[in-house]
Image (tube, rainbow, N blue to C red; front, side, top):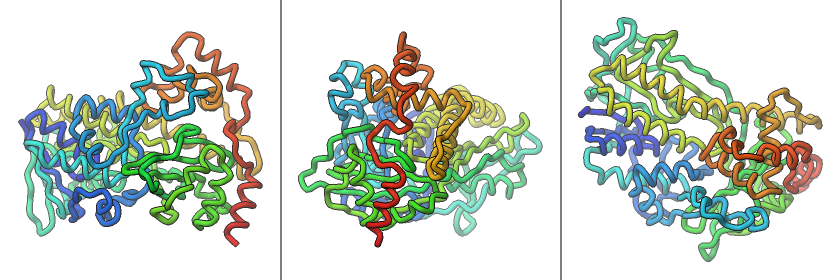
Length: 474
């Protein structure tokens, strides 16, 4: 069994460490932020400081795919989230019966457990701390990589890390789970290696979000899907823990006319224009309008031109690739990636470093890279659509997959079978190809959705939205 260092005690780092420890590895998690979580949800939300995670108090939601994986691999984490006030719900069963056609036995797959990010992370940390073979060290900053001679002449072989004060921590394998801001590419280059292949671009979205709390612990009724698309923006309505929830507008960062949504009065006036979401703002706000922008799409590959750029080190989850978070896929992709690493280490030991890096690259490209590419394609189309909205035009593209996704979204409002297919894709339970494979389903989608309005859910046009924001901001 191996001595493994996991860099970063976010959700993906904690999950990775527990999966590896359950297989008998000795795992130490190194976390830059000093403060440890408590066990009170109110204190966690109000006081736990995680400056290394800029989206720590932004909108979060855990998809049914994540819940399914956790139920199989780490059920104690789900139990801890529930014990901390987390929300257990069925994302399909929350919808009105006239949309779903009533509950079916197969709808159990849409069950999930969710909470705000501090509560989720604290729950995972609590379980990790009592997991045999896992040690968490907080307030430890990794300054560089320790390297030695490895099997690939041009690639440094990582044998540990250098932390504050110059101390060296040795390991058979280093796993980077430091997230979106991962410095690992710079560290590999500083160690004399070739920089990992990187694709990087601003996702182009900006979020204007608020969190709310109910007086009686209830949550608003779902009148539409969690993510709804409208002219010039999208709306997220996400249940949380302990009678809380989050609501967010997602717009293009280039749309200067919507920057008035930073103002709470304008934000609420705008929300009231959307019949399927307005009631989510009728409660006590527990945050002001939270704005986050500059979110990058990033993708790394550690085998370049057929050769590893480093051995003894792998990247998991957001450290490997990250996208616009509005689809909520990061935790599920990270969990899939962590399971893939755990499974690989059952066949390939860290003392076979070149084979390990090559095989992990192959597995990453075949299992989670397609999910990244799919998400990135959606983001690009949606940004182009928002740009067309702002210009008073209709977005046109020759990409048939985008036309099908638009038809699927529209048709889901009119047929329970199509709605289940759409929910399955959005829950990451199936790919669009898998969801549409049922006999007759493509025909339904085309009949009901191909000629539907661009935005089938009731909402304002752009002129109405802008005038409302302007009036409320004055």
